[in-house]
Image (cartoon, rainbow, N blue to C red; front, side):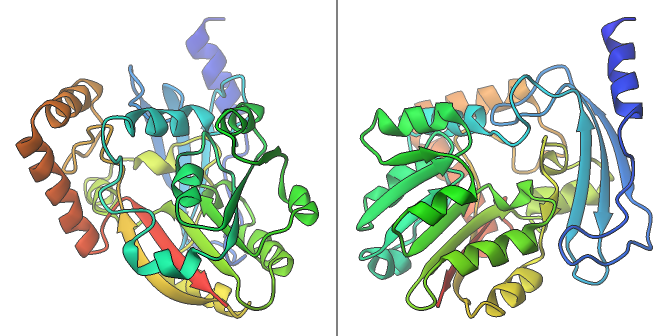
Length: 317
């Protein structure tokens, strides 16, 4: 049996359908979009395999997306994103890797007295950013490589999941690229909200934007969007649902914005990712300040329209 046959056998052995919405629990009446994606080279920042089959459901009730990507997994758990987050951290040596700041000026004064846990911290780009503006930050991740990386940079960090939080002293929490990894994100958020103080606590949540320009472009041309193909990406709550769900725990949305990772040279108008083109764009924006300025401006325009690749929420109670 060759490698291609093994992959087909692996895919056919997996569950092919989702009965209920991962976000609100409603039963799906509409059939899924099914994509078979095959690429030769995996673009920077993605954990996907070369061959991916993905079942994508849109929930009419909560307007969210549930996803079941099926692929031959790498050796590490599908929940781990250290490799991708390490690339963002490495790229930050050249310039700030996002089109709009993950910590905008308007929230800096509001977070400066807080002790944050950066949950699912990965290699720690955001952890290190947060450290500049808050009283204290603690990294938590299930990947030992992530914890080792933070400790080497004198940042307090612990290996584990949400059980670790019970033994830590903190009043606020951040999650960058974490929420989409849960098949029950609503229950997870409620559990986290119970751990946080009932007053004067903050919650920063960042996850892929299904209303981003790149996502809408892919849907228009009936092409699979990157984030629907990533291993362990299951849940994409709509903005309306997330704000409503957080309000049930007395968290109000103080600020919402979008951003995109620009350090990888992604083509903002591309329907599919092209490794060669991205490497060329990345070399140009590193070498020529004018080209970089125009490139960043394009993505800032998308952020102005809330069409960036990443949803960013600042909640408080």
